[in-house]
Image 1 (cartoon, rainbow, N blue to C red):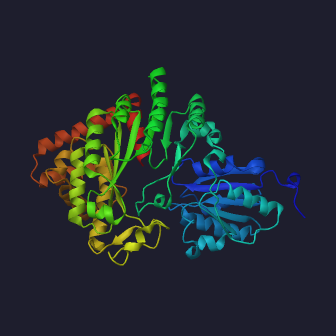
Image 2: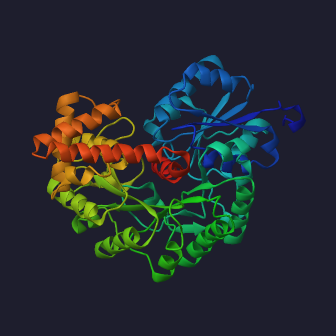
Length: 501
């Protein structure tokens, strides 16, 4: 017998995930909630943060007496979510567990969390998850465990932005998207599996941004993989933010976009140069400057144009630039990576995000495993451990380099001292410092700023730098840090660093 909605508990369905930080509000769960249709009134969203005690999460979930719990599973939360699902199945086996998200959408047969759960929705869940919930609650009971997500036209998807609460707007990053998908085929990225990029109706999207802004939202992070793919749309979106800045220059907005590095026509440059300091951030994926490596991983990029555009942005705009490189790509050795790193340093972006290759489930990068000796950690986040060009010990040095680079360079706390550290050969200079700090501390985390500054000073003097020069540079960095910590001056920089995290 079908169950009448009138007989269902007040909160029949829970949507949940474990975010990496409280400041990260789940856009995916809000999309699901917005598209629950007649089940929206019996659906609740409840987010947690990784590191929370498993029993506490389970207790809070079960306090709502749910019939169904849907979990968003990602590379950063799969291990902890697995523990949550395992405990739920022990203490409340009657609760139906549905999984979704990129981590479980591919290679599900080998995953413990999938074996524990009742159902799995792979890929797009906007339409398929509500359909599955109706079948679970009203019957007939679904027979198949795995349900391939149906991809509707974007115009048929209800937008989720009114589900950001006042608390979200006041204290969290608001994730938004003007498009889904990506036309590029970079084999290390899940977006390589998309056929193209699909835009939402722009006027409808901008109306949603207008409502968010009217409610007090000032910090927007676009999750579009290719913001500057359609220049006409990019210009309209940027104009939305420019209009807000012109109307209230003392109440600035901050927008973060991911851009294609070699596609920056003059019309877009004209719009970018209008943004004042502290209001615009670009995330730019270079990944590698080696054309042979780029070809191996199906990445199409005009390196000369990309470098030219980064240089232009640094010299002629106020945008904060966060540029990505990936170590451990097939076919790239230390010398090649060092050349790319030095080239990027010479362009002077504000931050270089030094990443280590990860084997995301479903990505085609594994086709190079045998030929290029790729060895990945079997546990999340599935980082590369070694290749035929970079052995395990050297890869560990690169991992430490990345960590110390964040602490010293990307933190902005050693801005005046950093050029002295890098010298004429930035990669070699910083690698030497990285190796030395690790030898002295045996640590890459929980190094107090005062101790880190003392280590930097000691190392520079060991390299022959004048002690008074080093002391003056570090003192100027400290003075600059104190100045930035003053509320009026600090906000844009804190926002930029937060969004890049």
